[in-house]
Image 1 (cartoon, chains in turn yellow, cyan):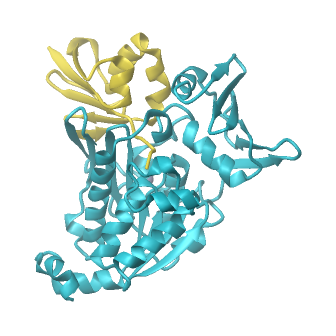
Image 2 (image 1 turned 60 degrees about the horizontal axis):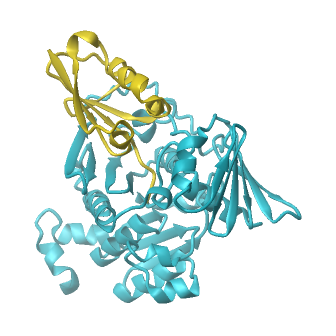
Length: 81
Length: 340
Ligand SMILES: [Zn+2]
């Protein structure tokens, strides 16, 4: 009963994790998973409104539902060029 | 056509595609790292006209990744637009190349995008990208987002009317200072070339009329962490609520989000502020800037010394850059070290 969670780039630096898992029974949406990590890593909060959210490699809105076995990924956009 | 024989032999382009390329007009905004790779690929490919807009000048620290520039350009401190055009003309004298030493902003963008077939993103900040997004939609010109920092980068092509737009995908500008920039967190050459190559491939598809081949996914790559990931946007619900592509409200073109500057007379300083103030978190900014020089901050103000300038940043995002009276330079410093 788990959901795989992927953090990319600066989000992986912020959390110290590239990949982890959460209990699918504790979460109904992508946003609730993000909130769980933002409690442990408060600086995630400032990125919340400007992230790319994906479930199983598909772009989703933060309020999208999640299910057992899903892979949720958080991508920061970057501005360098 | 001998010059382009290998490209013409490539069946999806062919002779017809090469002729289309020869008539194509491209605006490249920003000619730093991504921009110089993009410019070289497109000029070698034989596009008809390249308009190259950049507000910066060549610095020694650019040479590690900005492949068009040389030590001589840095010694002379040439504007990037000028140095780039010189080298590009040596590479392919048949391409018409137009230089614009200018900041691309709400005032200047309208004239730059006229009679262009494609806008290429070589910028280093989100505000200009949202502006390009508005311009793309208003004048129905495709544009291609590319960006990188550290060892990570992304690419996404936007086709007005056919795909989502930048504001569908990223509804809010990241708050100033929240994300790392190349000037605070560094960048390695390979990710620049990789992202620019992805952008250039989409450009060739668009300019040769191969629209069905255009990648509708966001491509993300991290060359150090060995990760490649894509995000499929095909299920993105374009329900007309997007202010830009849905309601055609072009807030960035109207200047509502423009950074504003004011020279502070007699103080050798320029003030920069935002029309929509948002609280700034000093701690992550201070941590990044501390690698470049002395930084101190309290709950009201952050002060940092970089490049012989002093940056003072206030909670609402307002900044004062001391050591210059040039508002273009102050904007460049703000984008470089605070971000966005
Ligand atoms: Zn949109």
